[in-house]
Length: 640
Figure 1 (spheres, rainbow, N blue to C red):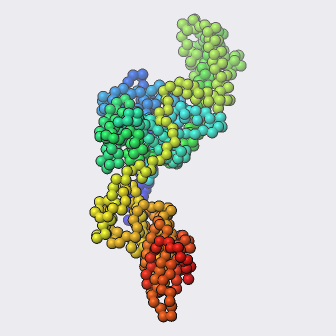
Figure 2 (figure 1 turned 180 degrees about the horizontal axis):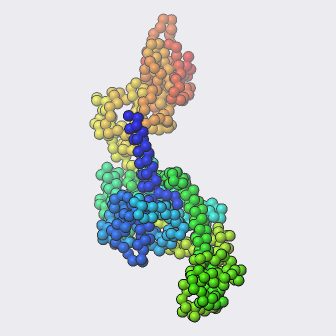
Figure 3 (figure 1 turned 90 degrees about the vertical axis):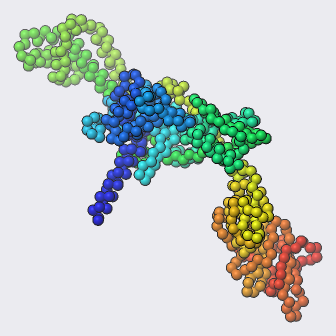
């Protein structure tokens, strides 16, 4: 049994680790999930400048992806609609309406110029064997932009999830420059569907944002939604509006969707309703306003980790510096190899070393002749001459030797040396070089990636304030039922979003949502809205002693639907009153040798105390009856 449990635990952990690292959570370095990385790798391999059928790209990606083709196709459509890495041709669906893309055999794609320039460089990319060992695939791409934040993504793994909101590419690049200059920067999401955003609670990617639709209310008889919140479609938004209309929260006569390239949802209003009157209701009762939480979980150092948006950008910027340095090193190495080759060629031809091999009869003698011919020029060569170098020289054709242009060769070598000096300077000033690279990228792309979402400060609409109080809260004394679907005495007009304070006959109370129909028992002391300044006055007595007390309090703090007690145990309410200031009148049980049977008190002599505080004793005599009366002018007696 233990072995089965151990096997189960091991297999589950391996499965969970696989789903987290190799399927659902993106890598911080290039911002891609494995399936996305394999799609881009396939596009780079297939790239010939022309469009490819998506079905062919999916088939090519199957060489690297050990799962079904459906996941490849859907991931490709998602990346293409981000409009950064893939140029698309055909029907890729509509991000506004939620319409799906055409089948893979009907649509085409290719890697974009920007995508190839910022992701593709095999010379600085680490490769590993594909799942079947037949091919090589990249571990991560050497991404030169903060892909993770630019695209945004979401995924659900075993025991964790990630939701990274998309940001504006140009703003991210500018933030990278500020970071490299040791200056402060702020990151605010930017959504492809536009709308408004309030990022005051974004908390650098650890909090949430409010996303709102843009509503045109210029026509008093209708409103038009021009942009929608992030994550919504026009169909889902219309469903939420129709649902609110059915519940009577907003009054509309019709709703139509004319969305094509741009969002246009037209809402015609009922007669007598003006457009400015429904905007708050749309934000309060429909998905025209949504709250979106951010959770940046990524793979870093081969394990999942939660980070802030700033930490991701800083990591990507530091990695960009490393990538640019590696590319400069690779270029410098190539130029030095080329310069070495050009130098050998110049010496070999100018000094007619090739003449020395004419009389040699063996290949070994030929090589030695070339080696010996190059030895006097070792200072110019500056690198050890290898057998491969000799073979390269021996392969130079006679025609090329006869047409050799010394001046042209020297010019090429000067250009190589000049470029090597530039590279050396760039490596010495790598931060400045990185800033220059980012600045050039901003200049190239600034017109293609303008901010779509307008940053605003949004005051959260209180649904209780917006909702119309058109329901009748009634109490049926005979049955003890309370609600807006009951018959009986009218208490107050309410909305479904109001909360109601109910004080029962036994002095227990609770605060509840406006009820349709609920049993509260026969006899209520109070039922109505919660008012902080409303004072409740109670004359009560102890069941055994009949000694009278007065309690005065307000009800402000509460937990919804929790039952509270206003009186101590074993006490009964004698008289209950609220709102109006009334005095107290008591009648005592007759007692021998005592003439005083009635007594009155000024209510103002008794303080308003906390809910948990006990009442103040009015008298030591047994109470016969008590009530609240209008203030009287004769001198009142103080409590005994």
